[in-house]
Image (tube, rainbow, N blue to C red; front, side, top):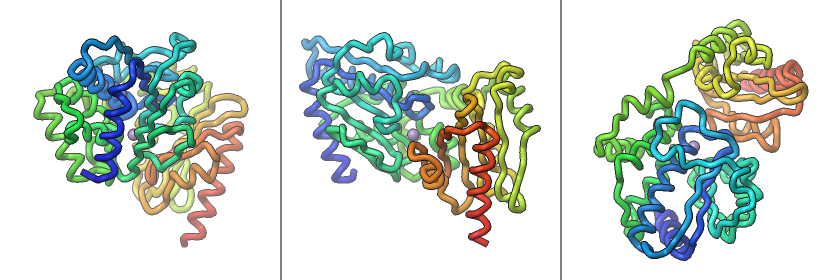
Length: 341
Ligand SMILES: [Mn+2]
């Protein structure tokens, strides 16, 4: 285990043993890794506190800006997650932010800011905002779920890997590695996955529910976006869009575009895929997937100070109407590809 990680986990134990109330939060648009990590950490901390400080009354709350999307409804403890308005006047001693910077937790931020100690556990390029008491950030690790698995390797944390913790960590691993296909997968990722599977979890069902199953409305949305596909620079750039009207026509929810862009990215000769999503008259969400050298995380940050992500998957929100966002982003990408040639 890395020395830094080991020290952080030791420090974490000291903080947890002195806290009577703990808040766990994560991405404002919860995904498989942020949810799986939150739910696994919830059970790890519950287990630890029952073992170490059983007499102490304590509270442990998971709170996110948005409710978990439907495909996560089968994850253990998912019903524990509360909405921010339900706890907006509560105070917690320790606040965790997983898989996101503190600027990416929406309405949970004011609750987090009242915490005595703020802890970030993230694998995105460091965006520590300075309010963290402890920032455990490892950008080379596949997922926060893989980081959380570190609790089971550390002597200060004598926690048992239960099938319910395993199911949640597995959801995080497969979500962020594309079921171990992305290059962020390492031998350690697979070793951890092996330990999770050894607990007897139904891993095939987790993959189906979290990644493969789509509603019929989502299928209609996929069909509608296919009609908007365009390419430039000999197919190296491919893009499509989703208007609010398309969402209304297909009756798909805004979060049901998941997986669409990844599919486009695997068109032959594609280096970057972009999906533009109209959110309002002057608001467009843009998602990027790269297959090649272009770092779309850096590109997204270049497009918007609040943009970001990873080398191969990133996103940003632009204060522009959909056609303007499309023109600006595609022109910028064209320029980059023209410069490469
Ligand atoms: Mn993640």
